[in-house]
Length: 123
Ligand code: THU
Image 1 (spheres, helix red, strand yellow):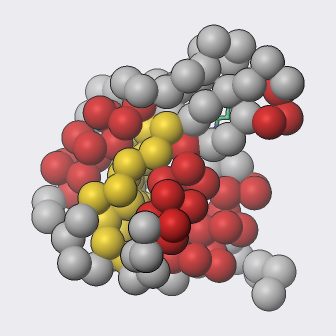
Image 2 (image 1 turned 135 degrees about the horizontal axis):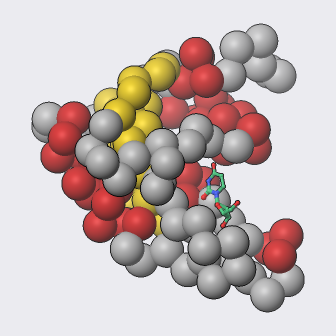
């Protein structure tokens, strides 16, 4: 699948984000080994720490559905923001060293591997 196509899935996921408190919507799309796309969006809670990030929604959803081998992940936010530390750790533990496409609303994106996102990890 083309990079831009996976980013489009992330954009669709981002439209499902529930971010009434931060207003910062995040979309994620995870491409599995067999070509399935599993999407995630951030979902905020009135009890703020109960919020879950888009990346972890996608990863946990994929694992729960029995997928554990992945080709790539796409993320999209307004400003091309990179994943939080907690998500980087979960990505490293579950995705392997795959490329992560990090896009903004203009369609610009950068590509970083999971290993580049979290050097010197806790194992
Ligand atoms: N958020 C994500 O979905 N992924 C990240 O890696 C960083 C932060 C969400 C959590 C919260 O809903 C909003 O962005 C602002 O922090």
